[in-house]
Amino acid sequence: MLTANNVNIQIGSLTLAREMSFDLQPGQVTAILGPNGTGKSTLLKTLFGDQKLSGGEIRYGGEALSYKSLAKWRSKFGYMPQDINLDVNLTVTEVILLGRMDALSLRVDDHTLHQALHILESIGLSHLANRNVNTLSGGQCQMVLFAQALMREPTIMMLDEPVSALDLHHQHVLLDHLVSQTRQQQYITVMVLHDLNLAAQYADNLLVLKSGDLVASGHPKDILTSELVQRVYDVDAQVIKDDMGTPFVRTIRKRAA
Image (cartoon, rainbow, N blue to C red; front, top):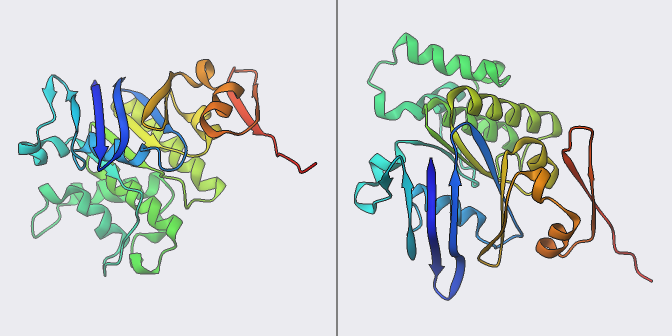
């Protein structure tokens, strides 16, 4: 279990987390939601150790995050950042193999290569294996970075807006595979999303942030309501539940009189 206890994040005069406490469980997907600028990405970076705590602590398996041993801490993570920059002269397969940089030698063994190609096949990218990443679209690069995160064989998966550049089909390909692997490998998975309906479909738990506060947490069926959408996003919405109880958010346009 990955646990945040009374976490505070302060950058200059800006408070991005105020006494936040939550648990992230193995085998479950948690989505972080909230308006722009409310600290979603910063919270991910803090869990990863890339942004220092101003107070509180983060623990995993009884071990507290220590900035003196970040390499050891980060070895547990498969981290897919928001900013995509693959300006390198490498093939797709080579970029994915970099996910195992800690175990690579001058020669890539057959098992490691097979593993990379299997991941590519599982997310429908086998046809890109020998393509230079400089020739890919933003969405394709996003899928490649997802594959690289899987290649690390993490215990914690962290993804910052992983579907922002993807079309509808590939959004579901990535998220279906993410949920499947989370269940099978018992990952602790946490991701930042903007799409409330994708979060409702794929997340086991939501962390809803606003102005530095954790304003709601829990299963989408329990907490995703029109009142919460209005409170957090200042948007009128209808929240309708399907036969399985999964909420669907339909925003209501404000029309001029």
